[in-house]
Amino acid sequence: MHKRISVPILFLLFLFIVFGGCSTPAPKKFSSETVHVYAELLAMHEKEKISGSTPDSTYRRDVREFFSVRKINEKDFQKQVAEISHDDLTWRDFLSKSMAVLDSIKAARTVPH
Image 1 (spheres, rainbow, N blue to C red):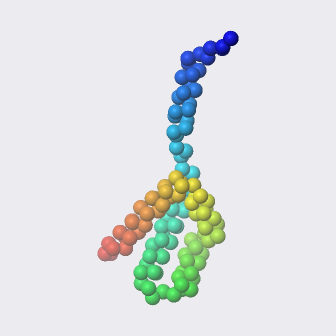
Image 2: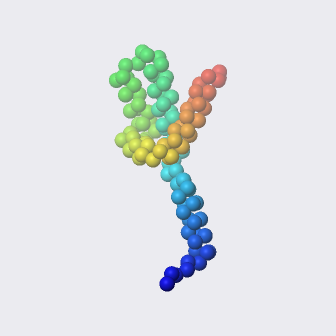
Image 3: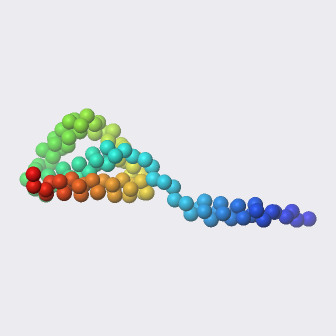
């Protein structure tokens, strides 16, 4: 004897498989401060490296001062960025937002005061 499975249960199972398997998880959360700090560091790196005249030791000193002035622990920040980078969706979202902030930083530099 075969047991008959009800149609609504099969339909719900089908929907769960189709839509449950296709859903993309939301990116993990990160603070806007982390985005801004990352973008500022990218801007500093570009500026220092483009000039070509800043030795690496001076650049490292500038980075340490950057974190000190903002009262941010550099190791903690590096850990946050590393955690963000482990999830592809979150990392892409983070980079997209960081690039937008970087673009606004660059635009602000080119505006005459």
